[in-house]
Structure formats: C-alpha cells, structure tokens
Image (cartoon, rainbow, N blue to C red; front, side, top):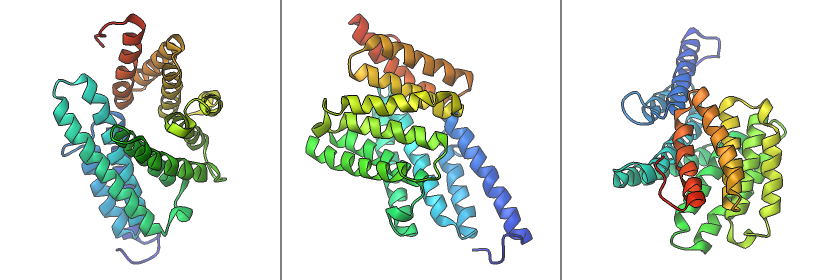
Length: 273
C-alpha cells in the first residue's frame, strides 16, 4: 500500500491510473468483451491491484464481483443462441462462482451488510438471484433461500438516502423480479411486482442509457411472464433499439433470446433470431 496523503504525487498517479482502468472495464463490459487479455475481467484484475496499493481493496472486491456477474449474465444469454452451448455453460458457472467469491470477500472486508454501499448490496442481491435461478432446477425450496436473502438485501439497499435515480430504478426492478420468482409469492405478489417495475419505468427519461435499457428490458420481461406477449414485444423491441443506438452490445445479446422466446410463444414455432 502506498503511504501518504491523497495529495502525494505517487497517490495521484495511482488514482489516475485506477480511474482510467475503471473506464476501460466499463467500456469492455458494455461491448460484451468480458474475457481475454483486454477483456473486462483482466482489466478489473489490474484495477484491483491499483486499489489495493491505494489501501482500497474492498472497493476492488465489489467491482470484481460485478464484472464476473456481468460475464456470467452474458454467458447465460449465449447458451440458448450459440451452437457451442456446453462451453457457455461452463463459462457461466465459473464466472458465477467467482462473482460469489468476490462479493463475499467484500462483505467480510467492510464488516457486514450494514457497512456495504447500496451499489455493493445491489450486486450481492443480483448474484444471489442468479444463484437461486440455478438452484430452482434442483429444488424450489433451495432457490427460495437465495431469493429471500436477495429480497432482504435489496430492501436494505433501497432504504439508503443517497441513491441516485439509476440506483433507485435498478433496485425497484430487482425487487420486482424477486417477487415474481419466489414461490411463496407467486401470483399473490404479481400486482406488487407490477407496481415496483412501473415506478422504475416512469423514471426512464431521467436514467442513463444503460440503466434505461435494463429497466425497459425488465418491463418487457414482466409482461412476457404474465402472458401479455404484445406488450412484451413492444418493450423488448424498444429496449433492443435503444441498446443498439448506444452501442450496448452486452444488452443486445441479453435481449435477443427474450425476443426470440416471445416470438416462439406468439407464433408457436421456432424463431430465427
């Protein structure tokens, strides 16, 4: 760790370097470049090194968890569409395991949930949700353990006073999705989920492009899950168009299989998305 105050030349140099790497991680993630020498994961590893030298390793742990989660999400979106699905399956489970490792390390480093930032809590809830989705194929009760923990964490994050519009919108769609997933709340929580996600959708004009795409995508997913395929198609298409306009390749990759599924349900045949 570099000693001295934030004004020292060495710390300033490290800080500038860390910020530049963070920007590259963000760009690589948006473009769907998660792996390889110049991928988001490799870049995030370099960023973690810089943060540890600055004495801010805990920040790096949550960032690493977020990067691995994004990679796992991207891999999951490719399993359906890519012919080499077994490869993407292995990639998905490995990246999800690494995401869990880093967010748990972050929790220990900061001293528990109460001391985690809203952003870190959101990452934790997202990883628990994805883990629950995997466990659901084995046991719904086992999955519910993850979902209920994710709800607890998401509610904790949503109660923070310093949330930006983007953070608040993402928290709302997270909680809506969890209410739809949890078996004990299935059906009874549908209206509550709609209220949460509609509130998030009303915030779209104030959101950054990436967050707006995620909210619109989730709004479309909600309608697909309750069987309103016309509304689902409208909103998923809008999300896809907005993602393409802003070069959000990873979001386009996530939306395509959702649109394909909607078309299959509407037409009763195989889609060629």
